[in-house]
Amino acid sequence: MLSSNRVIELKIMQAKGLAFYRWLLKTMAFMVLFNLGLVSSGQANEQIAGQTGLTIHQPPWNAVVKTLLAEQGVFNQKLRQAVLENLRLPILTIEQLADNKKLLELLMPRLQLLDRDLSNYVRVSESVSRFEQLKRLMPGLYNIEERKLIEALLTRQGVAVPRMRNSRLVGFLDKRISLLANGLVFNMKALVREQRDYEPDLLQAMAQQGVSFSARPPDFVLDYSLIANPSAEAGEWGFDSHIALLGKYEIPLVEVNEKIREVAASQEQAQIKTVQFLAEKVVEQLKEFLINPSLKQP
Image (tube, rainbow, N blue to C red; front, side, top):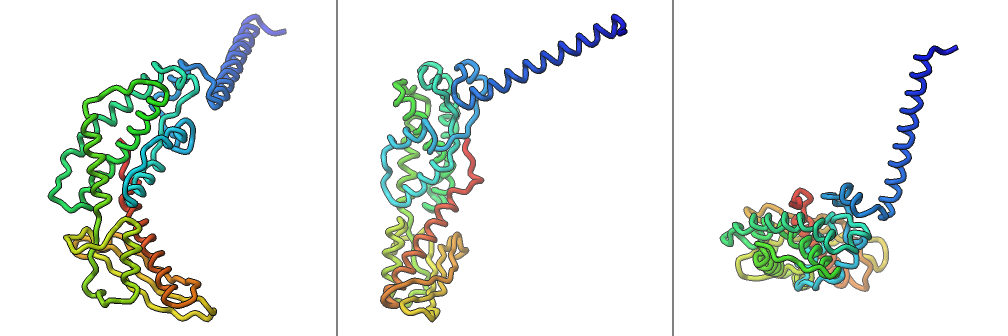
């Protein structure tokens, strides 16, 4: 027969076990509700304040991004779309979206941080090259695009967007980045200026990607080569190709080296398709160079 002390110990252990079991059930229930977006706004604020993790393809941001005005310029559009794709946005519940006061309370700290950090980009000197200016301003583009999304969401929900200290500055920097992105130009490397028959097609293809040839002081020097590589297949043309955008001291910023095969009626048509591919590829790499993951959001 158990002693009275032992009975008391067993009852205490049972009570603790029951309490733990109840706590575990509550925790699991809360997590299920939270994932469904059905927790009360008070509980949700405790859980999601300061968290980010949604992309522009998830609600409510997928609807908001469609309301943003289209930017001018091919390369400018490429940069901004890449920035939007890399953003990680605040998680919002249905209840928060339905409560304008709580929505503003949740998003206002982020807006204030984005607004304050804009001051970091005022000091980017115009004495350096356009490309160097753009490179230094790229973290600010993350800032600007996220701010646009948050303000667009508030407007969409009928919330008055507060005017903040750097409201004028954001417009100035936004315009400056667009001008820089749309103004990037290149010259040809002297050693490759041989009036190759496909060179006009290459210049046109680069312009279509948003980076143009110009005789004025360039941001890059373009180096390229296209060497025919005979193919055994009828109607197929092969090339050993190289294209690079060179920066200061002719150091490659981005470059592409590929063996390319194109199906075409003639070698001239295959060359045109090849240089179009090369132009798209090297400008894509230029975009990735600027949208470096190490350029973190504030």
